[in-house]
Image (cartoon, rainbow, N blue to C red; front, side, top):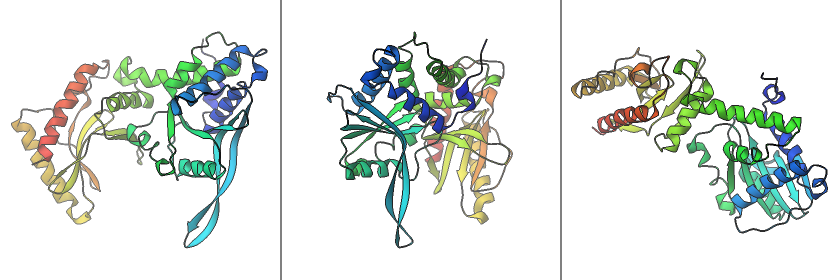
Length: 348
């Protein structure tokens, strides 16, 4: 029987910070006897961080001091005036009084507002010997994650990404830990991973948002996608994934997945040209599809805006029926076929 999990009711980043701060506190040598397993797993995780950032760096972790929401101020130029802005490092770990790990902890949100740059700059100004970790337990597209190491490059510092799978690999290596907090968080994190991988086993009709994220991550890791994310709209929003954009008659066009539907679309910013360009591209695309025997590419219900769908492929014709389970090899093959058609088409 599944029991209520505390972290399911407290999924915020602050709750995540609290768990990891609690766990890292056990890395201090004073806990090696009374809390042997928690001490070992926390040290193993810290050593994994260090190994990822500085593979040749050697340190014997003895004393550990953990701070959450470490606060400092920066000077920022706003409207021609220097103003002070407060920043907070999610988790700051001080090891042996002279080495630090700066952690930016994320669940489902992304890095924003030059957070990492400001953290690194502050650390340099304080003359810290430190490494930076971007701790990510949710799902995020490679196009965003690939920017993380770049954000502090000019400072000579690189924040390394430590993801959910890496965290689970460490935590799961201690199956005998009998601590309710540890077990609850491990179960919570494993549940996120299981839901993310559920696209491989669930009937398509039972997919949830994590299932779609899992499919997009899978395609992203095959280097098929240029971007994926949640797209909010008045009707509730959906998870979208774009293949690499191209151009047609100087307009940006895209082949994308809008959850159940494959779509071909065009971006037109000039309001007075939107209907004309949409219709022209749709007619051209549908005519080309017919000539190539791609009968599953059909005309959608038209809308009007800066982005407009011009053609679609329904779920059953690329992903499968509602009661079916995904055939990944076949789906990838189908996507490759339609993407190749789109690329040739958009080059004309």
